[in-house]
Image 1 (cartoon, one colour):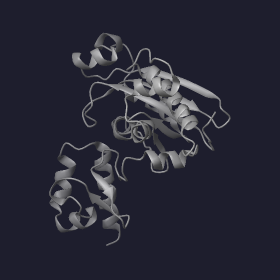
Image 2 (cartoon, one colour):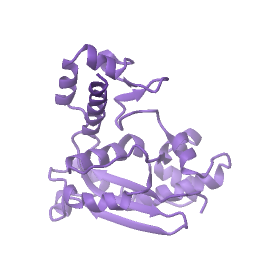
Image 3 (cartoon, helix red, strand yellow):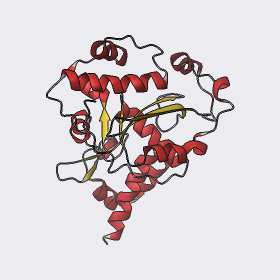
Image 4 (spheres, helix red, strand yellow):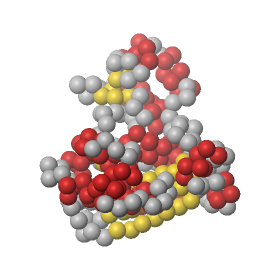
Length: 256
């Protein structure tokens, strides 16, 4: 094993009803948990999203309403999923921009208390794009010299992602095999939330990355324009983004 681990890491992939983190739901999750001693555990669950799966989406991942109508919903599985992820770092393909934000949304909908602030996240797609700029299928062919069978199946994509990272570490000797280094290298940007609406400035303070207050410190905006907090909470932002904003507001109020 090329990876240097001091704690487990969970490679995971989601199939969903769509790509809108705030509105769409998970229909399948596959997790490959890799331990420092090289042992691996694999888990795959079909999930009833409790909303229709659009036909165009089903054609991509092959999961239809009929396939999940008798499966448990995410809330029923949330405790089990959290127990698998507990104490582990995370890795995936395009996971920093989609899989982790969507997972966070589903956990919040399920009323699960979680904290990802100390979890390192390795995005294998970012490493790939920085090095070769291709798709997962091409990455699998390039690094593993194999064709990716059942692409867009969560289980196949999860295993392929793990193998691709192993191949990247074998090919690029300048990549350090530690999760901390890989997480920093594959980080898209330094955001306070998963969806990228709140980021950190050079002073380490949260700033807005969108809209009329783009580039301004969140705490100062909320203090100068109290109604903006209510607007944000009622607008169509991801739940985790709202959670981060609420935390900033509470911290600001506590210092008064």
